[in-house]
Length: 359
Ligand code: NAD
Image (cartoon, rainbow, N blue to C red; front, side):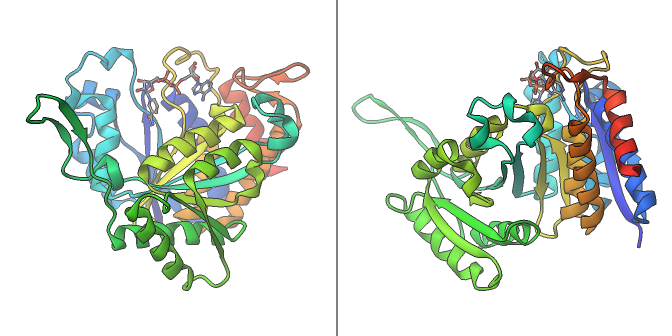
C-alpha cells in the first residue's frame, strides 16, 4: 500500500537539510520497497511570503491526508516584525493543533564518536540513548482558569491550572509504552505525586495502562530526582514519559547532555500514530545558504518517521547505522567537528550517508 509523506522544507537552513534527508528517504524507499510517495508544500515564513499565511489551507489539507510529515525548520529575522498571528511559528503550532499531535518524542542520543561534545564526562554520556515522551497539548500550559488578577488588598496574583484527564494520561501512556516496545522495553514515568494530586492520578493511570504491556517494565520517579539522575547517571533510562511542563524542562536538559543539537531528531504523534518529524534545532539563519548546516538531525528524523509512523523498522535501523558509520569515518559538519576529523559540507554529508547505506 502506498504511504504518503508530506515534505515541508520551511525556512533558513530548512530546504538545505531537508534536501539531503529526502535523498536518504528515496534511497531506503527503493532498497526496502517501502512504497512511499512524497510531495512538498510551503510552511512558515516562505509560505507567508507566497500566500500571506504561515500555514496555507493547501498545506494543511495535504498534511491531514499524509501518513507522516517531514519538516525542516521555520522562522528567521526576516519575519520577526510580523504580527503574532502570521509569524512563521504559527504555522508549526497550527499543524500541531489541527493534527492533534499530543505526543512529543525526543530522543537524546550521543553517538560514542561525539562524546567529547558533551559538557559531562565522556564515560557518563558515551552511547547515551534516552527517549523522552512529553505530553504536548495538555497540563498546566493549557489548563483553565489562568491569568493575573488583583486581589481585594490591591496585590496582584498570578495563577494557572494544572489539570490532566484520565483519557489524556492514558493516550500518552500508550504512546510511551508503544515506543518502549520498539526499543529497550523500559518506561520510567516522571511525576510529583508526593505534592500534586494531578500526578497521583497520572501515576495510577500509568499503572493501569502498564497491564496492557506485560512485556514492558514500568517504574516511577519524582521529577526532582529525575533531573538529578539525568546529570548523574543518564544511561539508566530507556523511555521517560512525563507531562507537558516537566517534559519541556527535562527534554532540554537531556538534549544538552549530548552537546550537539545538530544531531537530534524529534517526533510529534497523534493517537493514530501519524506524526510530524523534525530536527530539534531551528532554522539557523546565521548559516543559511552557506551549505554548511548539519543535515544529520533531519536524516535521523526520517529514521524516526520510518520507525514510528511507517512501520519500516529495518529501514530506520539502516539509516541510523549509516549515520554511525559516517561518524566512524571521521566526517563532521562544522558544528560537530573536532581535531583529526574531516569537515564536510551539507551536501557531502548527505553523499556520505547515502554511500554508507549502499555499502
Ligand atoms: P537555532 O537552533 O536555529 O540555532 C542555534 C545555533 O545552532 C545557531 O548558531 C545555528 O547556526 C546552530 N545550528 C542549529 N542547527 C544547526 C545545524 N543543523 N547545523 C549546524 N548548526 C546549527 O536557534 P535560534 O538561533 O534560537 O533560532 C533561529 C530561528 O529558528 C528563529 O526564528 C526561531 O524562532 C526558529 N526556531 C524554529 C524551530 C522549529 O522550526 N521547530 C525551533 C527553534 C527555533
